Every structure is written in structure tokens, then in C-alpha cells.
Image (cartoon, rainbow, N blue to C red):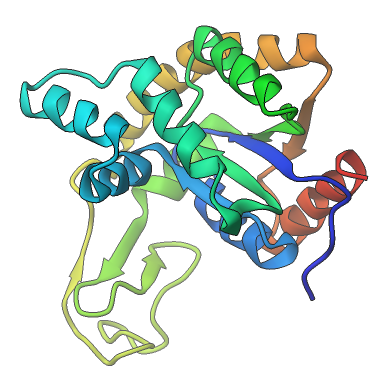
Amino acid sequence: MTEVLAQPAVLILLGPPGAGKGTQARMLEEDFGLVQLSTGDLLRAAVAAGTDAGRQAKAVMEAGQLVSDDIVLAILKDRMAAPDVAKGVILDGFPRTDGQAAALDALLAAAGQKVTAAISLEVDDEAMVGRVSGRYTCGTCGEGYHDEFKQPAVAGTCDKCGGTAFKRRADDNAETVRERLKAYHAQTAPLIAYYEGKGVLERIDAMGPIPAIRSALSAIVSRVSA
């Protein structure tokens, strides 16, 4: 059953690749009626819709340049005014720096909103190397598996569709995962400090079972949105 929040939530999920941000975001959507907003998806949608900001983003991307924070914020502002996000949003991929975080705060303040919580999914780095580097999927239906934690009931045959072709992402290897973790910590440390200073940082042990993490997240969202 979807829980009702007293005010629209603005949640930011922080965590390295493989920490389960996508999985938990989908569950928060189910539990609270929130909408996950991915920066990449927002940019593509704005370009396709031909909005002012979308046209600016298209020109920048076609020139092979990075889309500026101002354009991303303009697109985010447009999207957050849509009626389907009235219950709140989960921001995915933005902000990435404390400068972006400050700009987001200003954007929200102009709309009478603020970041409800920045939730850090905390994991053990070496455990994450094993978790990510062991992932593979069915080449037919995309069902996910893992060398250690989730193998098909019948070896070589997908439980979901019966397919026999499997694939791994080229960057899901131990060396690449370690580099991604190093980059994550370097980029995210300022954000952790920023939101801790604002008094909205929450930390969750994300090494446990998915249902336990979901329960802990739900408890935080219910508390901070009351």
C-alpha cells in the first residue's frame, strides 16, 4: 500500500555502483508514490519534447560538450512542476558536487521546497567488488544473476524465459569496479559533508538483505516527511 506523505519529498540517494540505488528507488516509488528522476532520462526527454532547455541541451550535446549545470537545473525545474511528481521525487545522478547541491537548494527554495533527506547507502568496498564483478544477465530477457548469490536453478538456462545465452557488462570486472569505487568516494565525500552540515544526511547499512534495506529506507522517509 502506498504511504501518504505530509509534504512532497525530495530525496537524494547516494551510493557507489552496485549499492542497490536503482532497486531501492523503484521500491520507494511503489511504497510512497514518488518518481525517480534520472539526469540522463531527463535530458533525453527534454530534447525529445523540444522544450527551451531541451533545445539548448541538444545543441550542446551535438557539439560534443557537457551539458551545463544551468541547463540541467532548468530541465529539472520544468520536470518537477509536472503533476505526476506531486508526491515527491528521488533524484538520481544529480547533484554530483557540492556546487550542484547548493544550486539545487536555491532552485528548491524558490519553489518553497528543500531536500528532505540525502540517504547514503553505505557498503564495504571489497564486498562490492565481489557483488558487482559477479553479475551477469540473460541475453534474451535481461533477468539478472550472480556467480555467488543467484545462479539459475538449471545451470545455463534462464529461470524466467528459458534462454541459454548470458552476458556480462565489460566494465563489471574487479579492476574497473575498484576504480569506480575510488572515483565515487573522491566525488561524493564533499556531498556527504555538505548534507551532513545541512542536517539532512541519513546513513543506511546497505550490505544486508534487500527487504531490510527497504524497511530502513521507508522508516527514514516516513520520519523526515512527517
